[in-house]
Image 1 (tube, one colour):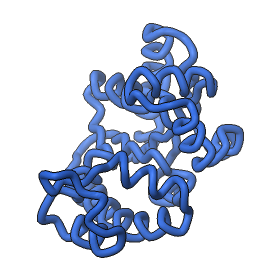
Image 2 (tube, helix red, strand yellow):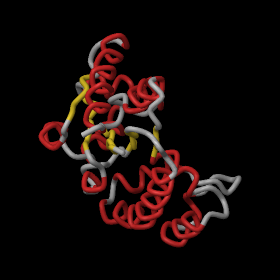
Image 3 (cartoon, rainbow, N blue to C red):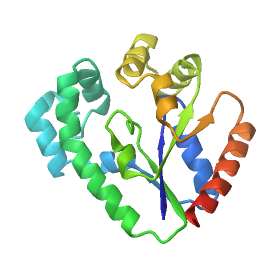
Image 4 (tube, rainbow, N blue to C red):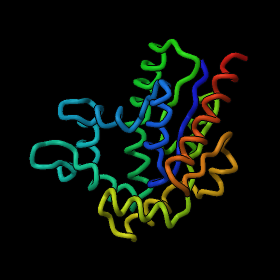
Length: 198
């Protein structure tokens, strides 16, 4: 089975592209969803995060305040590394477990920080969803109600887009409409089906 690592900067449209592949009956494993499950109350990863960052990162209902934790980590690379050391091994284990259960030509694994964390080594091909920084800012403002400064801080903490473009095996440009996006996904779908047969 061919494993495609899908990545892209914040607001580039990773989820939209993953959904379009999903409509073609391609299994999608989203590491963000795995991470959310791992930080539910009572989960060992959340206990480790509380031990590292304190209880101020919890909401009143004892659920993780993801936005607050993100703000702390994006402003301090050492703290971000501590968080990644807690979450990434557990995410990888869950991801591999889900992949092992599949019987299909290929699967897509959505990994937002694929290149930043060197995880391109654990997939067969990498697919980058790319767009302009202006589009990123506009989309994230509409979706998350964040300030331009907050969004730029997140973009700056991620690998520069041109470096990601150099590393990616395949690139989807998400600067047009959904029809354009669908057509790019269909082309890659055929390509991946062919490659899975090799």
